[in-house]
Image 1 (cartoon, helix red, strand yellow):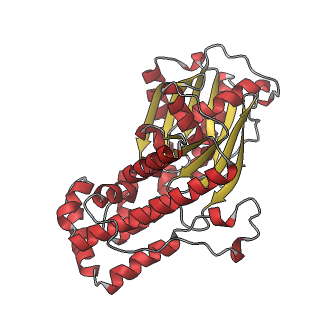
Image 2: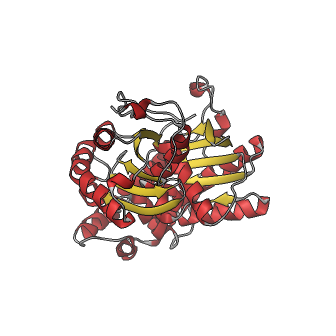
Image 3: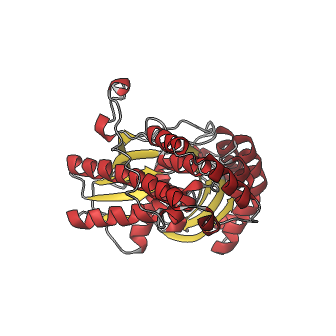
Length: 389
């Protein structure tokens, strides 16, 4: 590896351009971002069709798709940005967390590219990337983010609360809450699959929920037993999330209300519709099903909001940022923004494009590291269980 990749001194930008590469799960992404704030390109190759028949991401298939997609996606990102490899100041890549095989594709490609181009390589935590997706949006809107901020990262694989602060250009994070079982996005996927809907489940639940009564099924408040998690000293028990119990409650409702035949018929009907969309499922859902969907979503959103705003009050944060795939949920956005207004507490979301996994957020998160000279060495590898804070 080139000596510049292990330098501990600050690096001087020439173009300010960083190529970001993201391959932590089932999206192959590449993007060019200037100075951590101007998104010149954001190319993504989706694997939804590959994994849809299985109702979830199949790791082996994801790795194979990344291998096929990464070169053309990087080329597309450079072409959209109107730049060449030689114009770049650095290469940034997701180090973790995520699927081991998927991460390795991105890391090994980025290492090879950085070596061949004699460019610095910057390793980025995927969770930090999601937080910087919101910072990108704030900069785009010309908004100054009030610090310290509370970050809720909520997606198919993660539900975390972080206190985030910037000191002399370097960001610091403290994890104060997380899920002890299913992530919120994972719960959406599993409930959608249980009800015979499509994948990924979040958009299906989100669209259909607006046609149901969210108070029809009285799911109780979600609680987490403290005793099994006392060893998790970093997190506050009342700020821990758990969605497996809610998922089980939906299953029991389906069983006690004998909904299985209707679900089976819906699953078959949707399978016969090419590229089925959530709107295709509406005529296949009766009132009881729509009410169940709306009530489930209300329970998830309500739990996320209660614990996030409780954390903001406890730690006296000046703002809240929400990112990750579930941040695209319409009810969640409406609920958080309304609650924020009632408390005079700014709540910022990324654009829908930057809510889900993407490489622009990786390139943006890499910028302060680049300026500080925080670059990777030749021993960089994938870290599937990488933590933040």
